Length: 315
Image (tube, rainbow, N blue to C red; front, side):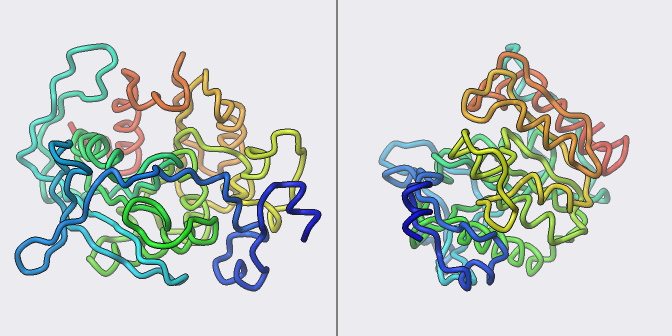
């Protein structure tokens, strides 16, 4: 074990613990996770004990309304999750600049299947930064949105690890099913770090509508140790290259051509390995943090959803 610690700079969890979550041998690499030092939101208790998200500080940005819960995971963490249902009376923002993420959309009839986006976010953010923006994206796409904080992020308990992120997304997925959301209406969305738990879940569950990978890495170990060549999947931390080959759902890759954190070749590699690769979006001149601000971000995602839910989706 000392050799692995000196080589990778982190402590590996016992194999027995890892096997319970199916996340590979190398389960806890602390430098993969960079939670914000302070939560970007509060969890407030309203009438009847109902929870809701509030601003992280006085005068901070208002959080969108939704169903907020604390979920117990298989690894005994308590994580915060929120479900924001689509409201038919939503009026999307007008597209005023070439960098606006929003575009006009017409009403989405209640008789049509309602997609639910299950968002797994990147490493350096929590729900406080994630929810205000992506709730607007989901509204523009006329979808429900579900998002959560990993163990050790925001107001979720514990310390983050690879195995915990797997248990986290599993707990949220189970919660969605209990709410009555159908598996075939769920679109998994993993951004950067979130591509790991997203692909792990998508590889095990074969009935999702689709998968979106945003600035995804091909291998966790190669991301944290670029000089490495090959790692067997049982040893990798998020072996995305292996997991994507087990995903039955259509997979849409989004990646910036100037991503300095995760090179675009990782996205291209994953696209080649996908069983059902959808048209990728290589965002010209975008880096790791601004693909979602490009002019074609929303239109491309809409076309992906149209391919899944029908040509009249959102029209």
